[in-house]
Image (tube, rainbow, N blue to C red):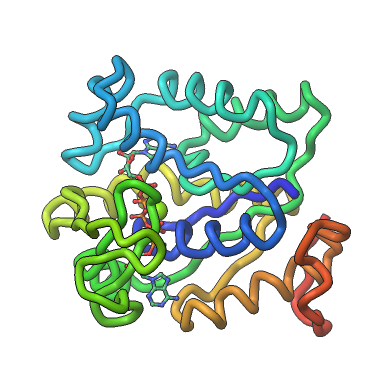
Length: 234
Ligand code: AP5
Ligand code: MG
């Protein structure tokens, strides 16, 4: 399985990628989580990326492409969450996958209105160790401030402050949203209604994948009966 999850900040990419990757035994590659890990470890990349991330801007393409090439070198089954984010990154990914004869199965584009994105980001709490996200109203942990899985502390991301969120939305509109038509033209795009509950979003994704045969034979692919709707184009 090779999927891209495309969508604005707060659209639910990470929430869904985590569920789907576990279900299908694919690797969840979140460039945001990778960058935050570099920043935590104070690597050269983390130090360079920090100033861009803190103000809600995109990290330069050459750094991102190098990081992704290294990350994907030994994997053929993945969900990309947060990459590509520019046409340059998308072209580089295309070349990388073509060389390895690993075509993409689909690009899932999460659609949500701006007010909902802001509500989701400003109410988000994250386990910085695992990247799992909660929401104070929509998906609270059992005990406030503590991860249900490992009991670790939950924190609010610095870039979830309203001023930075607004910059991230601007960056998405200007740099990333052109990828919707880029992948539409390649016949890979599937629209996902991100406004529904997390469970219903997962169901829509599973329906789309099952209908098109993506992930067939992977662990977890038998557990969902797919009706007949809205297929992926190939
Ligand atoms: P990154 O970490 O990728 O942030 P993002 O794309 O802005 O997206 P988020 O992680 O904020 O949102 P999400 O869609 O994952 O939503 P989530 O599932 O958490 O990137 C951070 C920064 O790194 C960038 O700004 C940039 O600087 C840099 N960067 C990363 N990749 C880069 C690249 N390729 N090029 C250049 N720079 C790059 O959900 C959000 C909230 O909603 C949570 O609280 C969750 O619990 C809740 N929620 C989820 N689904 C639902 C639902 N269906 N109903 C109700 N609540 C829900
Ligand atoms: Mg995320």
